[in-house]
Length: 232
Image 1 (cartoon, helix red, strand yellow):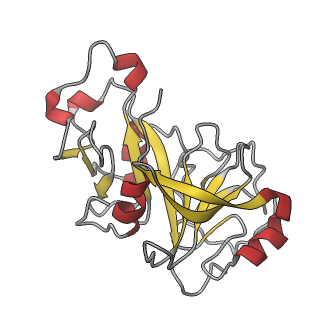
Image 2: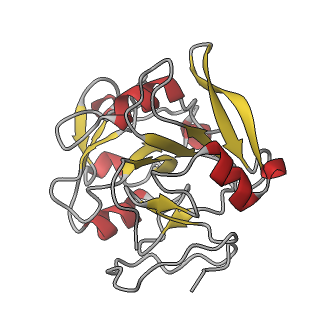
């Protein structure tokens, strides 16, 4: 069982987080190897693309996308207005792309009740088909893989509270633009728990020995698309 995602925390917390705050088309069924690479080729988005580049695009969606353009790109039947649950019984108007499918995304446009600055898309379905272009990062990417991709250990919040598992500082690594939340294997550890040294409102390092064997992996990715030039 995955931890409750508490999207309210993620929208407010991750959407503004930086290093100092706890904040040809690839077939969708074939993710790339999890190895860093530099994006040097111009990208052309196709309807069946399931990759994202933080700050640039996710599939055919960029910062200049509107509900009308997304519906035109993916089909009105695949892009529906909905109340997006932000946690603790709080909902705001938003949209779902590919609802109840492996490619489901939650989409919230700038402004609104929480005065969101950027277009924000949340990936959190366990069987999602979305992954990071050039990294392969997706839901289920392991802590060991993130450490390798980042190039060095990074900082995250301790587990089992509202902001548990949020990456707060990549420590100058390769993944600076990624907004990620992790969780340990709660189901597998339910009867024995985890060390108190990695629990609660504290910042911990991703190379701690206590994290090595408890099944820590990505459970949520937030792609923010600030206004600017879209990826060419």
